[in-house]
Length: 230
Image (cartoon, rainbow, N blue to C red; front, side, top):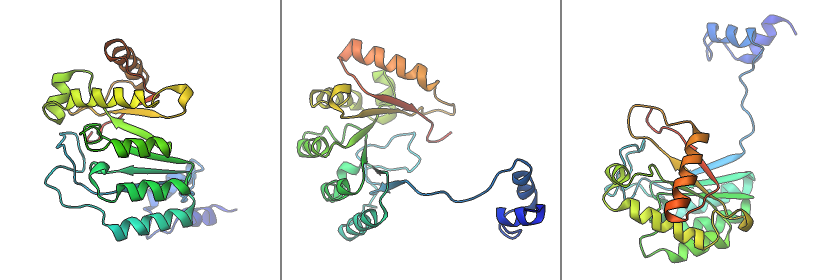
């Protein structure tokens, strides 16, 4: 293939600036859309917390929440499209009135269903049925847990949130989550609040594992560290 034809395949001049096209060609790179294997579903911006690191500015005052008809359409789309993984997020997805419908409907159409939680919404004393459903459908729980320091966590997320989060993790552990032999995955996510990057992920995972196990007997599978607002 000659140089001009190769550049044409990378993209038209109207869509991709010429210097960028030349750079792609020079490095033998192609700008092509790959197969979509993960479907992420944001069920709305309603949340029981107003976290300083939240890039969506979700909170108790937000009115945007996925309705019944949209939930039906999402399930139908997942059925048609066969994704390797489906990731449910928010806001706090626990607060969406259609969340049980979504979990039950989506669980049939992917091998990996993920549910993101801030832990306090899941552990508010009203959602034991939701925890049982997550376990029954073997949903991967991805829990936001920003700090091992109670004062820092409460400053970021609200008074008393740290204790509620610890209690939620202990409850999930008692259900089998986080234990390798159970196959019920519990992953943690750490988000720094300031204008800096998080610590190295492997180092953070080691420290979180040591402290959570020693102080509260909590186990988990993976820790992911990233900055929502770098």
